Length: 455
Ligand code: PHE
Image (cartoon, rainbow, N blue to C red; front, side, top):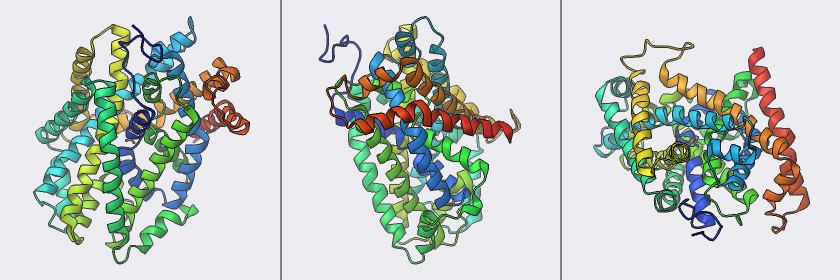
């Protein structure tokens, strides 16, 4: 039996284009927007970082996304199998395997931070953020995150929720969940942004976000911005390859990728508007680092009118955003296990759940009792974050654009982007997309790599 898009019926697929869009945007919008983006903006000089970030989204992010989409939809397979189908007898499959390894690293620390979100939602519901005393809030967070059992319990619950949705499959789990949660998420964060921007004294926060100060920009800013654009758009991790493998042939690739990148960027900016004006209104330093969301924000919530309710909404949004992303990361690994080892979906989810449970536990403990265990000067949590966002994702992204731009070649890219000439896409747009894939993205990625090695 075959489905409408001529795929064997046992391979799951998305039901509609809107479903694909919300699932892709759901994967993109996540802790990267609500947790990583604001603290990187804070540490790297505000608007200048945002402009460099936007440049990378267009020059490197979009072309890599197009390339991944082409690989997934053309092969109807995920990760390694996709490359094997498109370039049989070559070693390109290794690029796919690297992407899956990257997802293992990401999901391990992602699930720990998702677990922190659950704990903080619980604290918000119990109205625990009543003190404006920074020291007390710091002690609250470090006491919790460095302890043994509670963060592990939260990590397990978060991973369990993720696994529960992925077990239900692509159409019934991922697509349905994202369709309901994504609009809700946007509404909540827009509401918080309006509250934050109307606080007295919020003006400097808006200036910080939108008036560039180039003096804070260093070579590290560029790597941070590039890494963040990949992390936030879920690139170089085989996520887009995997989701695109469930997409029907008639989908318009350019339009889906552009809408996903736009939704993710707009969401990051709204998250910035929800956080920075309040940070400035209460005279707090924006460069707090990764703890911004868990220490600085509760401080602000404790002093803000209606702060108790806003705190609940914020941590609810954080968890929803994290879940629509964590399901996509888990799906990459699960799809790989199903295809490579012929596992049933349930078995694959169970096996990957156990693997990430253990690796995530190591990440969690590396902040507390195991913080003496360092590799390359980093604890396990930071190592996984660094290896994925600043290393593996970028290498995989480079391999993916080279594969599509040079191995599959111009004609195949043209065919995929225009669906064999049936979509009426202006010639300049096609040419620009092909130029970005073949030249701009590889050049940007290689330049940053050379720059880093030289430093
Ligand atoms: N883009 C997600 C976020 O911003 C993280 C992610 C990375 C998801 C890689 C899937 C794959 O939180």
